[in-house]
Image (cartoon, rainbow, N blue to C red; front, side, top):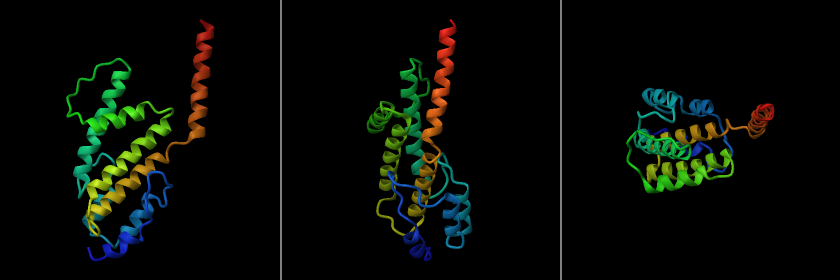
Length: 173
């Protein structure tokens, strides 16, 4: 834990509207030797849907609610029923509705990312140099890593390709 006093301040700041300053593997390299072996293993195996580890169980509860609300609203938009029961949260429902009404998927992801960062900040709270901060940082880095998978030019090219194929099918009718 004493090494956290050096590790945590040495990590670059993560912002929802910023670039990814280091990869997750670079983050793990920073952690190796500065955290316990069990903490390192938890960090190494960390996924956005993980439920084990400091702060991670609280995050899992929030993330599960967010995913269920996304699934519910997507189902409703498609005119399908959603059979899974879940505890509805008004704020999450509003954020999801705003994201689903965004003008493009990337903007929707950025809205959700900002909300997820805010939630992580509130979960970390006043913790300074402990596992809560470290796992909060790791989850934020995983979220940014996910956002970086979106490539606008590739996505637009794929959309145009699908749209052209659809147009050809319509014209051939």
